[in-house]
Length: 207
Length: 332
Image 1 (tube, rainbow over the protein chains, first blue to last red):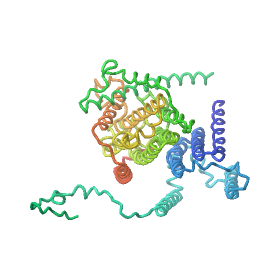
Image 2: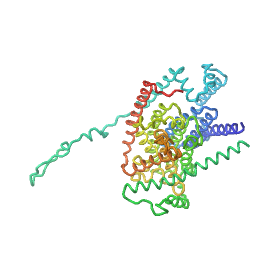
Image 3: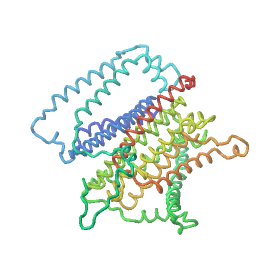
């Protein structure tokens, strides 16, 4: 049990410290690296309470895909040069009220969960009592009781994806595209023709 | 006391996995160069030791004694962390690979997800190296590499779903045991081909080695690295290639299961078959490097997103439909 407690405090310490470092660190790219460290330590905590599937999915989705895109954007926008002036500036930032609002909402959400409010009271007993693996039990619940919510969230993600594409899509003129079909179906007659050239007159190639 | 005892026992096991692995990585570099040379009718490294077997050892010595140069304008901590990340991630994924039924370091329930997660983390070593170098070519190489690896990860994920539909478990040992009757390469052959090509792209091997295309980007994200730090990138890359070969042989070639289940073949230890399959896949990797010209970047992206992804998604529907119709879906 000692080792378990030790690792729990180890990972939670890293998670909390790196979460603080995300907001404090001067360099934006460093912030993203700390965010990644935070995700990794949280997924380790998930694995420690036996939610191995959730921990791995957290690693794959957040660290493997989402944070890569964060890094991408942060590097491409060259915000690495803009230093975080949060703790240096004397003027108040305009983001503080919004941040506080979000913080308060999350705080109350956590209180509701810790307070023991359950959406389906019999659910946890259904999962824990059965001796099937974690992945199977999530599948059993997700694709039966919660299928509508699951599909709804899928639709929301789809709409968000289409929205992002529509917002950033711009049609460019004069763009040359490769068409494999056109390339491969090109015959000799399309490209080559034999012309008798009279001497001293030359030939005009139509273009 | 129990903890200390198990700690020592585990370290012993890890040591006995890592030492052969690192030796294998060094040997595989030699094999890669030899195969490449033979395809081009050259001799390849054949001077150091018998058949040039000690070439990698000599190279390693050279790298160790070279000076490590850290660019003045680089971000030093991230610059040093990048090769360490690559190397560590390439090595820790071997913890779940089952070499035979009872020869596995950690037989976890979500083994295949662990492999997938670690291979999706592999992109960070490259991104960190490219960004921290604070130089044009490494940065461009890192951006290219990140986009490429994220794209091909998607199709690898869908291919894994195909295999999992036939197995009904995320455990790697279960995946191998499910292939006792028939290797998945036979029913899922198109998926094996796509897995192989995606693995080439995932490990930045030719013909998809655009992140380090020397004609355009010097050496991509490795440009500013020297000495042992460069060697660590290089070792990590080859360890990742070996891992992809191991993954391919577990998912499609039946892992440690012998090809013919009869008398003389039963006597061979199962580890032998597993290593043989890894080597076979690796020689395929090496052959592809020698015979296929490099892709253009837009073609690479087109291949990943417009051809592989729709095709493997269609195959998921087909596999699921087939298994459902003939009532072959694995029971929990």
